[in-house]
Length: 81
Image (cartoon, rainbow, N blue to C red; front, side, top):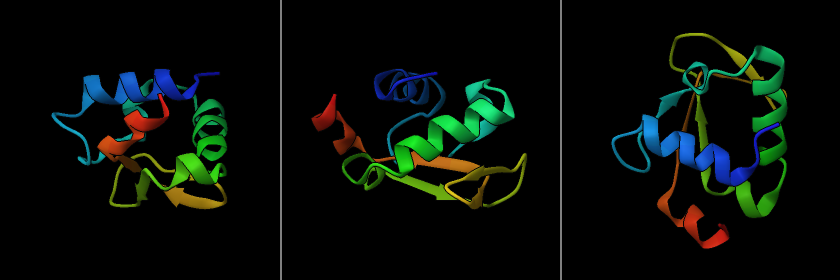
């Protein structure tokens, strides 16, 4: 399972800059792993405040019981890395 640092590194390769939504399917994880990884991060208060999930179209995943297609990560996540 990917850890926080790996998720942020992958996000940075996919997004032109922080705070830009990226499709969860672009992380190239299976549906179950996508749910596990992002739900785990979303359930940690210190991490979740930097993650913003949206449901705007595309492949849908369940993150902490909610449907999501994209994630945007705030640059301040670097304070936790």
